[in-house]
Length: 260
Image (cartoon, rainbow, N blue to C red):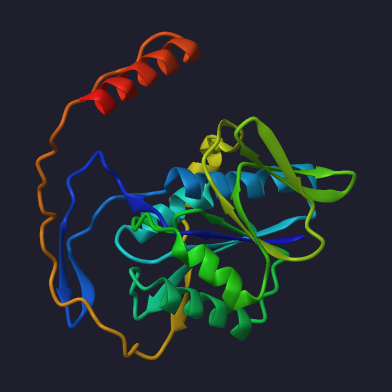
């Protein structure tokens, strides 16, 4: 099985953000921010590694979104020894435009005749927290989407993906290629790489692949403004006790409010 893992990384919250601005509607970054894999990135990579552990003939190709701190991010991924690892350069890079970015990635796969049988991607691609790109990418590729995967394994030689809804488990056995978004879960917590692989990764260099597109004719951002601070009102009352006690307290509160 050919597995494609798409990783974007997020800003490392342990360090202050670098200066970010806009130049001709595109993001310009002053200096190097520290970027690390998000929990969703880690989950996608770990699921691919688990599938290869069970069936060594699986081939893992990883594309890491280019940008600040890309070499260190690539080295951290290289320590897990994917079969191929490249830096993905979107041109132009408009991470807020999920439609454009998904088109660029889909066009790249078509141009390179890449036909992965499984595409694994974190449920939020990067720092934007809106989750639109994986859905649009599946549509661009014409593949079914399995969202919020938590675990993957081989069952009787068949790929099986798991997600949970409340107290129920949903297993899916795809009958062909598909895109799976991954959410974080204790079962896909990324393992620690071997130290010898970490040291080898420090000496590696990486190829870049370009994913160009014509400049979109859509509205472009012209300024970055600080988030508006909103004073939250009201008060919070914590419900204590077991479920029955909480339900009784909530019912009493609603009755009181109705009578007021």
